[in-house]
Image 1 (cartoon, helix red, strand yellow):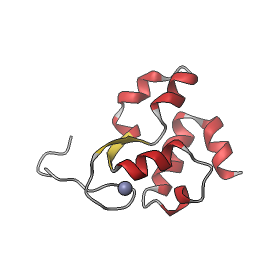
Image 2 (cartoon, helix red, strand yellow):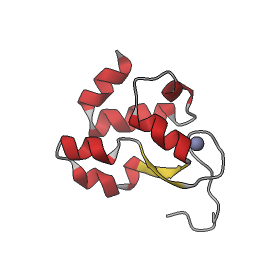
Image 3 (tube, protein in one colour):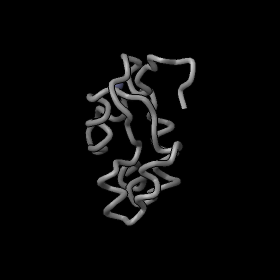
Image 4 (spheres, rainbow, N blue to C red):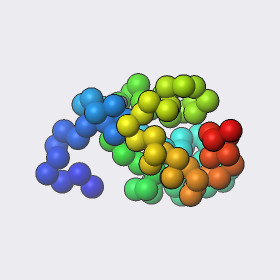
Length: 89
Ligand SMILES: [Zn+2]
């Protein structure tokens, strides 16, 4: 998935990535019965722990500061329209 990039940067803040983050959290996907998206590339990216926790709580202001905010909206709209509606309220 990231060949040639042994040290990818976080898609949220451009710091060194520490983990894989999910635009729509796995816990949320379980709740709506769409666990297949836990492993789909469209919902994943390299990230840091800070951005990972920001993505789990979309109601804060921090989420809007993420570099990947546009993609977050797009992916959320595609996978979890109910969650997307909460984000754009
Ligand atoms: Zn980050």
